[in-house]
Image (cartoon, rainbow, N blue to C red; front, side):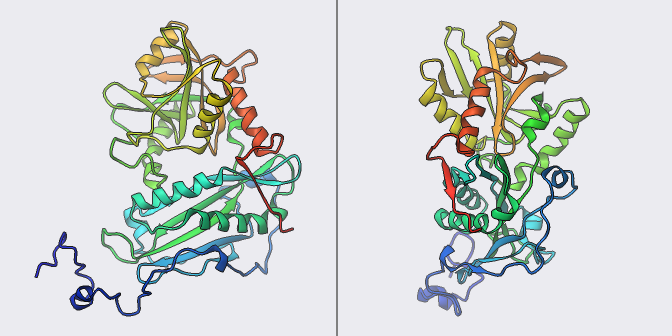
Length: 404
């Protein structure tokens, strides 16, 4: 009988069990789903002092809050009971899948303390769904995004009263899933760990003022059609650091990633890239790379800017998700049609792009009357800040209970 790859049988399980249709011995007949309602609480006995934001962000390591949430998974039983417990080291064997085969994915999101004193998450359901999609791309276990969302709220409710007391401030949330099976074998992990941590991060957009981009080297790409550029996995980021270092040494601060022989503009570092220009037919257009070829991340901030522009600026400009090239951008700049550009993402928020350095030539991008960004850039930044800090009541700004 054929038990080779493609036969539909698993050579790692006894043949009689597979033919019987019964679950393996010791396995749960219906693997348990992730259930936030079963979360257990073990509060730290050594609470730490909360540093000032500037002090925390000056550290060589991320300063996290007192607690984290973890949930174990295995292929026989499904998800274990999630635990809220003191922040601390993870226990992994050196042969863990994530350390060798990049079976890890994560999300980036923020929790904000509004001007009204309330805690808010920004469109958290999109982050939860995207983590599920990223996990699927690298054969990590499935879960209900609503349950992840509930776990995020639990951590925020416990730690933010102490760690995020000041209005107009934020902390960074990092839900993460890693393959933990201790076996040197390229395969779908049979063990995994979901964890959620919360930390300080710098106000990158304010520190930089604007982005000065170097186009990617001709021998490098960040992502490719059919790859995993759309998934938030570590393998998208580590290999990009070399190009970033080159840009930094040239006095620039990020990379504009090009793709294909025509030099399609895709992302700025790990953030989405948008341009406002006037087309040759005279139409004012906000353009950004499309999602269908899976080259770029379906960013929450990107999607929000697109939605807001279509809802509130439809009489002023056309919004287009379409491929555009560095040659088209250079031509628009030379003809005076390039109006502004900005990069968006959880870390950068909305950050204007002031310069693009391409193959030895500088392209200066208009930065508005006060040099802080073009009018569309500043309008997007204002609208999003109004939502996350509670100046505007909006369905995207989800209020989270403070446990106090």
